[in-house]
Length: 118
Length: 238
Image 1 (tube, rainbow over the protein chains, first blue to last red):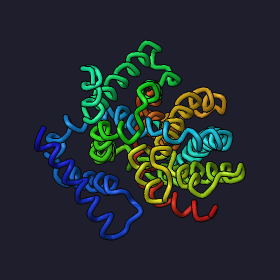
Image 2: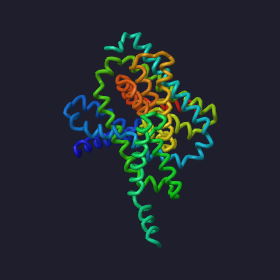
Image 3: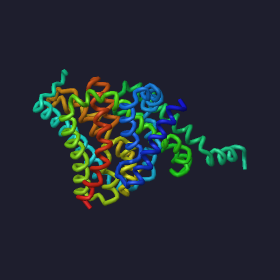
Image 4: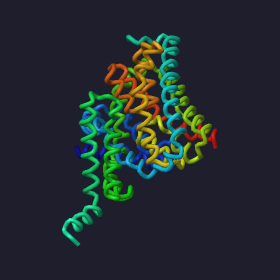
């Protein structure tokens, strides 16, 4: 548990330092994630070491959104003032993005002969 | 002061109370979600947020005091984002086989999500701060919160918009894509992960395993792309 958490925090730390030092638009943890994908690819034993901790954390991912979500109480006036704009924007853009993404994937897959059953 | 008042003033000044309340509220939300047979409308996060919001209101506690306790849970979003590397790396082979459709659909889906959200909100009179708050809403929460912060938005409001986006995707994706007649589970899952992140991905796993794997790929890749795309598209509306 301690080695796994240490490795995860090291990648986040390095990501954070690089993001700030180079003024990148990517948040530190995302850089840490990219770095860890590369590291897992290069050093396979790393996977066995961090997998239990990573799976435990990801299995409870939804819990981690709660504190930020409660922040809604501080934004009730904004939501009341722009409720319609936000509601229409969220519903239309989410459904549109799913449709466009799925249709694009299907068309391009057919075009390049990438078969779903491979 | 009475004993009760003394105990309350102790609890109100320490992280213990709100940390415990956050976990218990989520536990209750998760139980209700399971009782509702994992219906996406009974989202456990939404239930927990509603319970805690009512509790804060009843006890006259402001968000800053609450967050003093809840920040320990919030902090774990960063390490959790790093951990997304594990499923992503495990599926690298599947990604390689569908590399071209993945790349094109990622750009199309991600751009549609950011651009259409901003265009609609802008047309309906949203101001600059609200647009910055809204721009990253299709990315997974820890990343969206980070992007919102760097764009000058309201990160806590972004978190709520991210949750709502995921729920909208999870509720509508299956009937909508069935109506269109799309049968490639890779395409369905991938587009859902791009547009509706973790909540959409959880839904995709319920419907079909391949869809679930491709949804997690879509969520992971869109986390990276949105960080680049959101600031650029936002410029168009300022």
